[in-house]
Image (cartoon, rainbow, N blue to C red; front, side, top):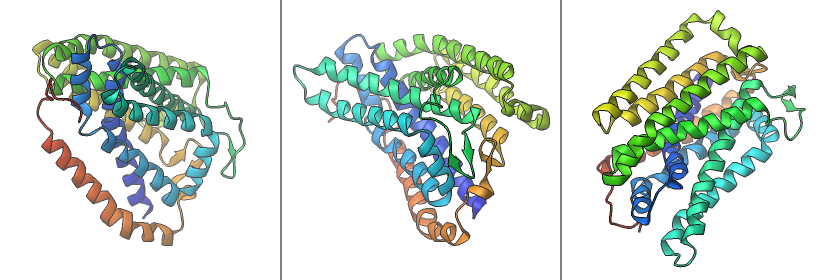
Length: 328
């Protein structure tokens, strides 16, 4: 049961990053759109799926609450402020998404709200990841740090890096889903965003070495981790080829593969810890009876239904987004 729920947690988390990542990226790039026609097409590219993408964040939180309650309580205690900021950003961008369609005199305000909400939510997610890599101060599963321990130069760097990464995913998605000026604008952003992501990776690696973070020792203990940088290099090449050949599907695929490589690196660097490097999966897991009870509800019904629904939606809206139709 522990292995099952660990795999499900990993699946829901990566699906959230890849799916909500691109629509948050579109929101970040939304502020760079030049006119209403471009903004409308950008919104049309994500309107059928954006709210469904956030379902995976809800499932991730639910699994932590039920299957790994120690992690749920510790993470919420350590990250109360960033979680509140992130949820506020997600709520604000969701309201802005709806209100800008009806607004007559305040459309610019809602445009700013949509873009800034996306940017804030993304930055906080990245900062929280950086804080997790640094480790969470705890004693016997109880948080013993301060309310701003999550905020550090390393976590700020990770927040900026995720903004660039989600922007890359968003640009890849817009290339895949749009035509005309938005498609060309997105193609022009991809090389700069990719360069920014690579600069972030180099800076984060150098800072990790300078700080002698425990996660870096795993590279010596587990040489197999070298496969993920190789996958990252291959994904960068796919993005380059996609931009050069104007192959609309490759940039997003390459960006998604790049995120998978980063995700795999962190996951295998942390295992068997779920809170690096203090709490293992075995220590954090709920009793077997609770895990088994959850299995017959969430494991057998909720997860498969959500997966099927997601696949159907993406299959139904697989073509290019229209340039003229509105959100509603």
